[in-house]
Length: 268
Figure: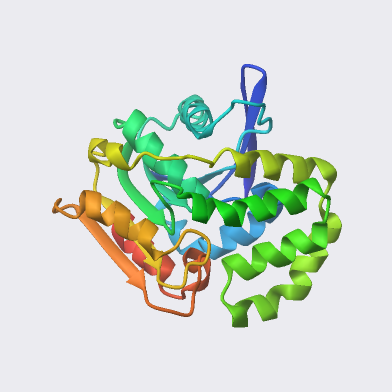
């Protein structure tokens, strides 16, 4: 599948993205944290979402290249919205996974006319201190330049045991390819999630919304999705699905029926 790469300059910063598909509708994907930038996995992502390519042109945005001190999730979200505008994406479906889901909720709140449908995968509207402890351990390993240790802790947290066992060697290979710049950026992105809390603002989301979570989410916990549902369940255009076991925090990648659920929701 053909993948097109683009860079959007915004002030002293820049956002990279890639697109694929030839559909008339637009889908924007905001992925979760990755130790190496999402562009490294573009062909894999495009192949994973190949069933979307007839109906949609899909745009996958990386996080901004520079994460200076004080540059928070709100700044990232506004810059991503501006980058989408400069690419001609005035209105689109939006899917955000994990950290990208935090940005997706903010984008739907701060730029409601842009988002026609919102899908969320294993994300949170509020990062409790005990949940930030997972990210804090990742930050510590990144700052120590412990590449292998970081990838192992990351994989163990994100994937259920049987899936982690199957991808352990691949993660160690990724660790060998990780640069100091990758580690510094990952640590800065992870730090930006500290004290994130938009739970009180979820009623400002105006579009139909799907929230998917996992009971065995060891990063944000099932309660993160339940909190979102508690704020939005009164709405007829809100839907929640909770995977009971076996898929972990990365259920949006590991559950075999997730992309079917996503496609059924966003194609309406």
